[in-house]
Figure 1 (cartoon, helix red, strand yellow):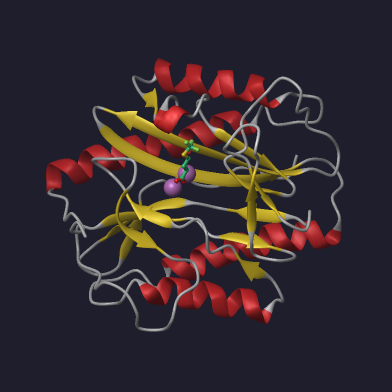
Figure 2: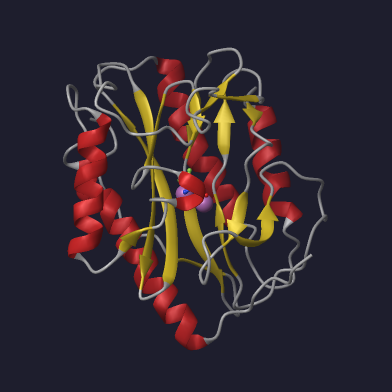
Length: 259
Ligand code: MF3
Ligand code: CO
Ligand code: CO
């Protein structure tokens, strides 16, 4: 197994800048997320925004992935591919996941959006999934164990009768897209590697209303859906371990996700 990279000050500054651009990409696209728009249009705007700001979309060509972001609607857990035929409609919940490469450094973040009137169940899932992410981030500090992130998220999910997707994880990030460690969103208390200042990784819980298992689309090889067709939600931040706790590198402040 490879080691978890401790980033130096210069690397941290570069990853912070890329992460802020990723966060600002989501803030920028939030104005265009509305009923009637197709997801390919959003992808094009995202690519243009990243390039205008000197960055490259990390997903484009990554293991053959064809687009500049992932857009995952309703029962899609993650890795939904933007396309002309998927048109946002009232009642949809969707995740937009963007990863920037700026001056060689990576930043990765995603958020949910909702379209018009959504069910109470869907609204609660979206709010609770964001809370799950922040409960995970609360565990980030020197000398804690990575498994406590997943333990905190899973305990919260169980209490609320959700399931936690276990087939996709958070990941170290910064010099590459996916580095060590794998950050599990469901894990035994006290398990995993020790957290040290200078480590940078994502936390990106995917929470389901029904069963946790994913089905990968046989035609496109990417789109991961819930096996029972029930809703799934996800939020993601890139996080740095500081001397005293954590810094959310992709945090760019509030914007409206209810459209
Ligand atoms: N951004 C996703 C993550 O959070 C990875 C997408 S890889 C892709 O790790 F190829 F599907 F784009
Ligand atoms: Co991501
Ligand atoms: Co990620």
